[in-house]
Length: 460
Ligand SMILES: Cc1cc2nc3c(=O)[nH]c(=O)nc-3n(C[C@H](O)[C@H](O)[C@H](O)COP(=O)(O)OP(=O)(O)OC[C@H]3O[C@@H](n4cnc5c(N)ncnc54)[C@H](O)[C@@H]3O)c2cc1C
Image 1: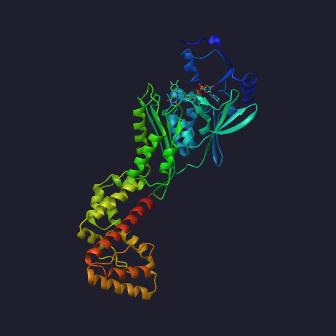
Image 2: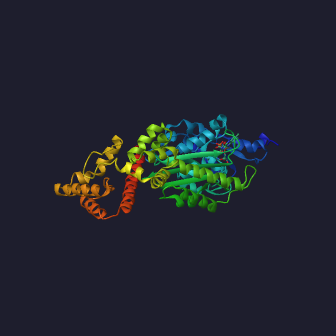
Image 3: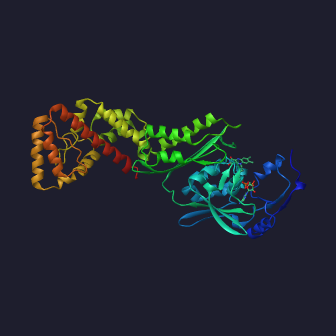
């Protein structure tokens, strides 16, 4: 049954000062109304207790989005439409603009505010996981002054917050440090628009040399309030993504949260879908642009790219046949597996694509990129003293006489004298031992080149 309008009183002060003064005089008796999209639902359902309302919708101090070098300051009265229109929100805080685009209908987005979403404190609210991972802070204001609290501390239980009865949220503050981080926002609902989430996720990660340097993951609709998954995050920080890391993160997720059962979904469904969303994010974060492009490039071109990393045609073709790779670590893992399963003649083909140590031209050059990489790898030898170069050239000659192929060593990071002593030691190997050692060295070269390819072309 609808509530009776005559049982309510509404005032609309023009300034923050007047609104706060009213709320301070009779704390708890005045309910702020911003967009009214939540309040009107309560009204329509007859669940709104007769009370007095203070409209804060037209208060300028609560509107506007301002930036400093280090922060973005969003007025609590900003609507979802304001958030969607703002260029900085779009570029620096995509998780928030995506959540704004998910919320309700266009009419809702024109009226509903971020402040209202926070204070309403629904576990299913779409923008709140984004605020958790961006480590937002809230500026709360009353006649007593301002205080700043971390949004992560603001919700203390189901629909419970730290807001005092005479306080308003004035501003939501976001630190500006996420440019270049990978981010994913996902909402799972019964349909794409106008649906309350069964589950929503906001996730952010910063990668450094193939490892997760920092990661933040938060879910909505999983618990009585939106949750940041600290256990999941610590299971992933500093890790390289692999199937094992993903398995551990899923286990950490199951240990960390016991999802709610409600009319929208079951506990079992939520835990399974949350694990899937997390896994999808983790597999996606490491698929850098280079890898994504290579995954879909024509086969001949993709083979040429692989041949720059390792000169065996069979290996390069097998790598291309194993596409698509969802993440970098799987490229490295698979590359090693394929290489170790190849025949000796395939290995030999790869060896012949390198110039001799101390020389510039290979018998069977594969690609220009490979030649350039060889030059870089062997720079130390090229710049060494003549006596060392001569000794290496003589070692090469004896090696080829003994084994009938060129000497393969991963020269990166090794001094010429060290290479010379390795060459002398390996001259004493028997054929089988030497073939295995050459193959292991070739694998090391290939792994370094693959990592370089994934990193440099991605611009990381
Ligand atoms: C049809 C429909 C669809 C919806 N779809 C979604 C959806 O997809 N995702 C989603 O997350 N939400 C959804 N909502 C919920 C709602 O639109 C949002 O929570 C919205 O952000 C609420 O903002 P508001 O300004 O309208 O809040 P109001 O209704 O004005 O206020 C809500 C609560 O917040 C308090 N409040 C508001 N502003 C402040 C402030 N600055 N300081 C202190 N207290 C304040 C009020 O006192 C009240 O208790 C939907 C609602 C409807 C009706």
